[in-house]
Length: 63
Image (cartoon, rainbow, N blue to C red; front, side, top):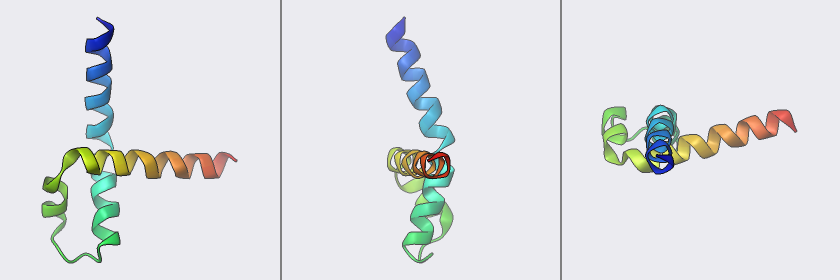
């Protein structure tokens, strides 16, 4: 049961942070490709980038 909840939590978190991560990748690469292409490129990388950047911003604001 715990494994199922962990899988669901990971999928949910990565899905939520996919859009901010794709936006960050899109801006960093100079907006050369359309945003839809960056969003569809790799959802796992987009989610991880979004999660790391937002967590870093929250840590920076709190500290």
